[in-house]
Image (cartoon, rainbow, N blue to C red; front, side, top):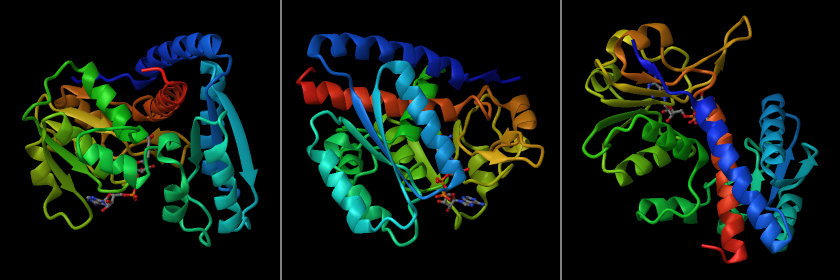
Length: 285
Ligand code: NAD
């Protein structure tokens, strides 16, 4: 049966490292790294994500500054706030929790953030940097998946990787990360014919379709690495992913659990990005 890729344990180790580096730089420069977190409206899931991000900051010595705005906030007002935060020398990272209400254009918002403070790695500048093989701030979820893959010790050069999902926040930047690492990459999405045939030949599978149990355990090639990004809440309140975990574990060499796999890594990479932006703003290498 598959070995577990324990995201919770890796995240804890990485967060301890981030805490130590943040403390050292804070002492040396007389200010802590600062992350501004903007939440517009009252989406319950977004509130949970923001709470977890703020708590991750607190535990690693990152100063988080929260801006919780009502759902009827205008796009113009939000752009004004982002412009202030772009100018604020105490703010190293700016995060706008998505989704934003329908009257606000998320692309306009993302593009208004100073790319040097775009700790989510969603700004076209940062996506372009990754595309051009010179990553600056990298998208947190794919970056976290790369850290999990590193844990396997496998050489990614030439590996057959199949990504299921092609969104701007997961599938696409994931493809760019794996390409940069030398893998052979296939991206499947809602128009892909015969998903099973793609999965069956994959040595590495990144499941990010947002469809509970889409990927059947019997499809997994023996020894493959399975990274499950999907998060779904079952009727009994427990969480599960895009992959049938029990049966997939019978075939895979490595597999991430849900919860405790990709989730904790995403927030950890946000903290790592904030530290990276802080270091850059301080003129540290
Ligand atoms: P999305 O809805 O924006 O994109 C889903 C993608 O999957 C699309 O490209 C679509 O074409 C593709 N897809 C849908 N059905 C498919 C099918 N049957 N076969 C093949 N491809 C299919 O979703 P997203 O924002 O990328 O998120 C995907 C999942 O990952 C969700 O469950 C989300 O909750 C989860 N997520 C987890 C984390 C984390 O930190 N663990 C972070 C982001 C997203």
